[in-house]
Image (cartoon, rainbow, N blue to C red):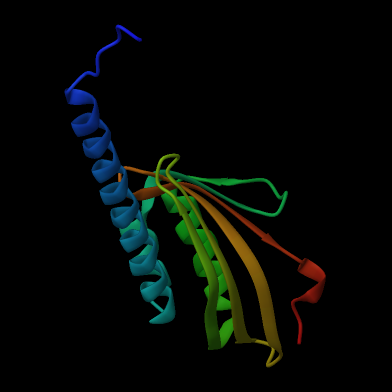
Length: 148
């Protein structure tokens, strides 16, 4: 027979940890969903101010990263200048790993460019969150499949 005794605080601590993890996952899920709502509403620049850290790093595929919120807002303004109209933004999947502060969003963006051509991008964004804001985001997509 074992002489070990159970620590009565262990179940409560485990329960408290589970509750904290659940709340963290819910908060991060809510932030991601709010971000996606901003994008669906065409509020992309507003989303950057609301959801991205001042020192955020954004990267597309293996291109050089863009560092800092100001530089990323300017990069996004350049992209938006080439867009005549958005046609669709569909989210296929969202994954949340609150323990690591990571989210992944699989989406499709379709828009009419300033040149009148329709473009479609199927992409995955991997985001690292810190204090409720995105500190790092990397997009993965096929650059050759953009024009429809």
